Image 1 (cartoon, helix red, strand yellow):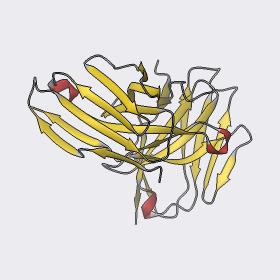
Image 2 (cartoon, rainbow over the protein chains, first blue to last red):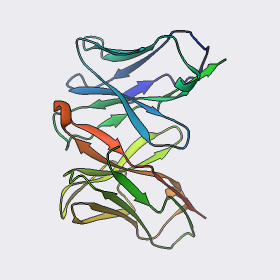
Image 3 (cartoon, rainbow over the protein chains, first blue to last red):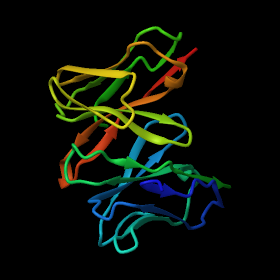
Image 4 (cartoon, each protein chain N blue to C red):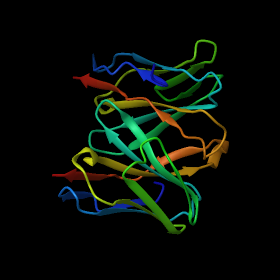
Amino acid sequence: RKEVEQDPGPFNVPEGATVAFNCTYSNSASQSFFWYRQDCRKEPKLLMSVYSSGNEDGRFTAQLNRASQYISLLIRDSKLSDSATYLCVVNPGYSSASKIIFGSGTRLSIRP
Amino acid sequence: DAGITQSPRHKVTETGTPVTLRCHQTENHRYMYWYRQDPGHGLRLIHYSYGVKDTDKGEVSDGYSVSRSKTEDFLLTLESATSSQTSVYFCAISDRRGGTDTQYFGPGTRLTVL
């Protein structure tokens, strides 16, 4: 079993739709969680951190469920510019020395 | 913008030749990382550094070495490149602003080994 698993997609949704991704992780002691966005042939960029209480940034909402060991990302009112690959990232420890683990990514394509 | 640059951005080389990739940062971050990204594997850690002359291996370190003689520069060397090392290489730094260690990436180097 992979340490971080994501549905690779692709998710193909119309503009304006709501779309949700889940990501599961295997290490129950994992400490911090993130969603990154990666455009084609570009570097991953931090989209948002994920907190136990859930957090929202505009049209994006991230949730953490420690009991079931998954994190989710919800995108409301999707835009064409949201088309990208979304990476789930898990830090198993507390510090920069912890070797963070990347999911393989979920591809999202927004159609007009 | 985390002030990270990588050079070269693209390189084509032949099997058996040595290759060095450079990562440069301008914000005095202590931790720096080298990853490779391949289809179906996601990002995998090659080596990382936690200070000048302090480095450690990641999960895919075989065939790679690193050096960090200055805080701002982290070099990745392929002593004798192989076709399996064809990949996109990303450098990253760790930043603790906001209380959580968060990684930020350079623009990447696309390496092709023929």
